[in-house]
Image (cartoon, rainbow, N blue to C red):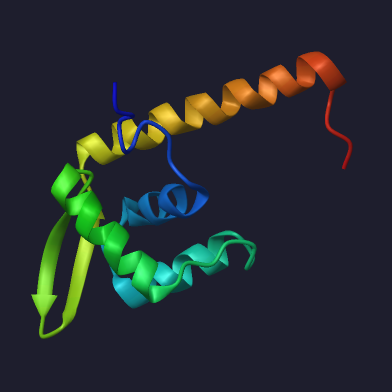
Length: 106
């Protein structure tokens, strides 16, 4: 059986969706991901626009505005549900780690 494309999200996918809690254009998304992660995660523009196209097609985001080549997007309810599932998956991994190694040392 083929794997569902968005069964799990990559780190870049997760942060692109996460920053679309408010309407943003592509350039604003790139800046928001970088700021949100203190530069730890970066998304190339080619990757971003490919993801945006896939996310629109999957119904995770919708285009809200188009001014020339500049387009803006926002998260849909399906996108929120997808983020919630990914958050729960990641949280379960953290709990599994804690069961084995105890609290993370900072």
